[in-house]
Picture (cartoon, helix red, strand yellow):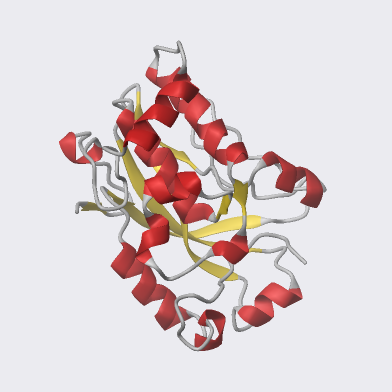
Length: 231
């Protein structure tokens, strides 16, 4: 697995097109769905945009679906789910892109959610700091573009969150303010990008940073949250 540190960009080599443990591009279901979404579109940007919205709005964002179980982070598994949180959705987008010949990586950044509810803060040990927000990073027209397909449009409408739009020519990341101009998401630390999802790192960092109660006394089947405005 290749890790590119913050501030650097990798060459779009074969490592960003191949099938991996989590980006199982060779899955027939992944390939078939990506081709169906792309339809007659032939440009990489056009296909990337279609894939982005298919993942953003086709799979409901659910912060309660987080588990420390590597199986749920495999793209073909995410495809079968009705809901997922930011990292699995990013993995699915990356696998779709690779299946259509678009180099793609997984990016991770820490964010502060200024609209975190008291319930969520309590679960997270009193913090509004959310480690390892995940997004896909697609190579389009000679540039790496961040694309965060986390919040589906229904959720944005319900909570007054500005939807994250993607045109394939600029980064699609969380909005700093919500629809009422209240401070929302703040990116505070970039961890770089990987040629596959670094599950072991993410699991270790989550367990070290958050209280054990957030994981149901260490049970990987327990729920965790990722920082959406939720009650």
